[in-house]
Length: 156
Image 1 (tube, rainbow, N blue to C red):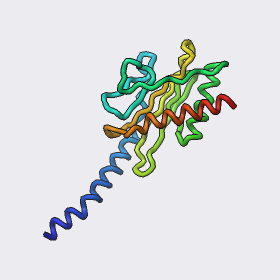
Image 2 (cartoon, rainbow, N blue to C red):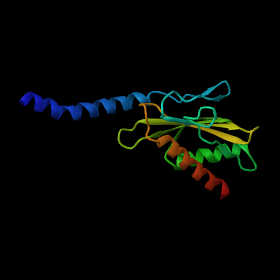
Image 3 (cartoon, one colour):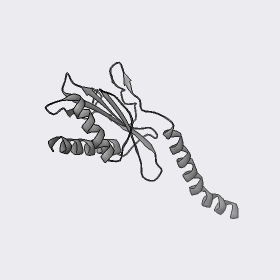
Image 4 (spheres, one colour):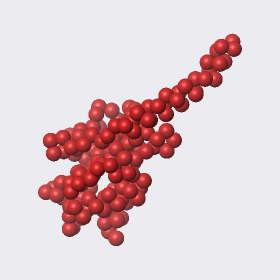
């Protein structure tokens, strides 16, 4: 009986240690990046949203419209927007931006990527969790927050 109680009392500690270790492993990874001139498609898990592939109805989210005046200035405003929401810029150039966000408790890392499509007048966006299967809608919610904050910054 004492062994069972000991095992049951250690079980939550073991789970916490595993989750923290998993979190540390995700921090060593990097964003998916650009493949064939587009953001990487989402994996077959519900922890990712992407505007680049409208045929992927399980993961699709609307791209952001470029305001008048366009591209590189909009990407600079997007960079400011992401930083204001707690994101950390990992990589950026004239057409691409990669940032990370961390979850509150376990510090799991999520990637947000933006690709400027100046010809179409769009900013394509991808938000994905590096770990786990489901994100309980967190990435879709994050894109909504980014969209609202970006639109507010552009209208200022």
